Length: 318
Image (tube, rainbow, N blue to C red; front, side):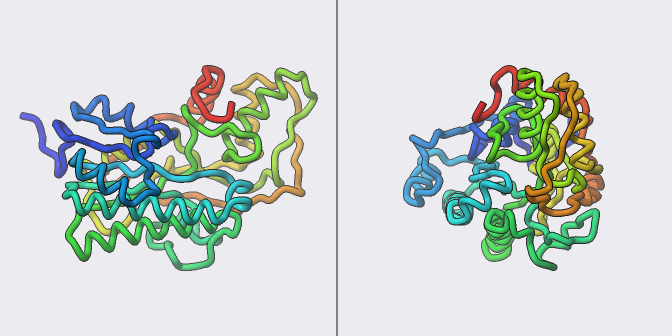
């Protein structure tokens, strides 16, 4: 006899908002194993910032479940340069999709946030309860505020309307479909590109931003997708849930892993005129672990996979 789950995906029509992004595309890949119908829509057919278009699309398509992975994303430089875009676009996307899901009777929705929602100096490892207990990291507060609003939006619709809307907060992600722009990407893909270009150029060294001492947690995007599907099936609660690998690494040590995977033989140099960002960010994943999920892709293996994806052109701004 097959064991039942609280929310089965088999036979459902499931909308993945943001299917062209790194997270959305990973969720689409993972859903291929669930015997469900995956709904996607490009920006030309569905502009998630346009409220009337979103409502009309939901009314016509009638999805049973939604993974809300669409967002405007970027690293420290992008957040600092485009604060209005990061705040407005993300607020509109989440508000339009959540409201349309409620209006059309969607059975379950998952909102994907980010670990940047937590206070800059939150106690480590960061528990879900740390939300709104202190000031945010200034270099990404616009994106963080929008993501916090998304969590609260799901909680509000759950409390007022009884909607089964949940939120998952991934740690730093990497893998196929990542953004490899040298200025606007996150740290790991930026390091992969820098190391690759330094290798091709025969450079004697590679420069990394900041002191190299901040510690970060990383999760392969395919592990995240698996966790999202797991939570969609097994979790229904008011609180957001952390999704991470359970361990962190100093940026300088991360750079060592990257140059080894890439095959760059030069030295690593730090540029301390560049910002470090939050000193440490490791999330407490005990809630998700207690539900029975754990990651499968080790960091060194994941970096090798990410570099293969980079070489294959499976990313943005290559």
